[in-house]
Image 1: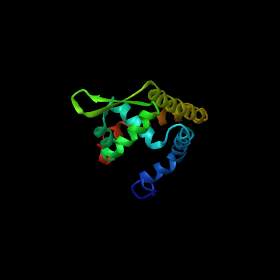
Image 2: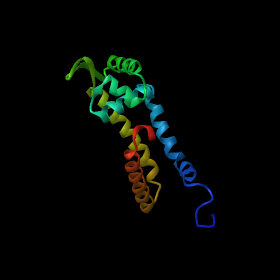
Image 3: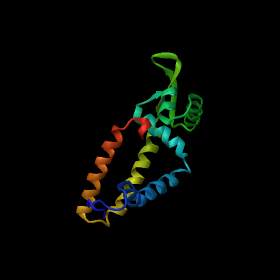
Image 4: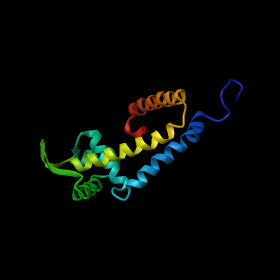
Length: 152
């Protein structure tokens, strides 16, 4: 502890150490899904889900890639049957992308796999620890959601 009651290590460093297990769990779940969908394709599916469908340019902005890269990603996802590509309703020169039932199933499978993995770990925690973890995670989600894309 420092003089003012603060820990010697900065908060972010302590948090990073504490979250390593959670990050490893998440990476493990994603790695298991890599046989079916690449991490970059999963990010694109998650972005389209969050956006509720989007033009190719908006997907590129969400992913931080140029429109040509977003177009190639959308070609792959369309070929895999995970998204649809249609003429945008407000601009016939633009392409509108949306999830198919299969694309939604991939995201649902990812969420289910993460929930099962988290459940296995949190069953070994006490009730108060689980509640504190949930409270902190909800606060983190709110704070993260309030940041703009560049700050994330």
